[in-house]
Length: 76
Ligand SMILES: [Zn+2]
Image: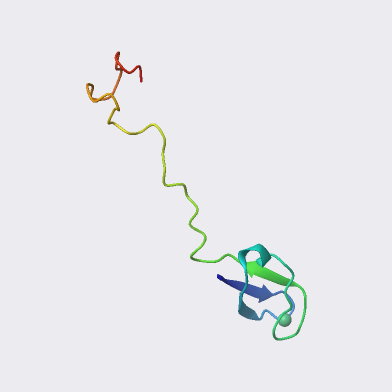
C-alpha cells in the first residue's frame, strides 16, 4: 500500500499514513491533536503522471518500403 503524507491545518502537524489508494482522500484524524482538518500533501513519487507515449511520431512505417513522410503504398 502506498504511503500518503498529510498535514493538519489546526496544529500544522505533518504525518504519514499507509492507506489503500481508494482511501487516500478519505477523512483522517490528525495523529497529534485528533483534528479532522487534515489536508493530503502531494506525494512525491506518484506525482509523475506525464504520458510517455506520443502518438504519431514514429518514423518507421509498417509497410517497410518507405522512410516516413507520404507513402503511397500504405497511405500514412
Ligand atoms: Zn493536528
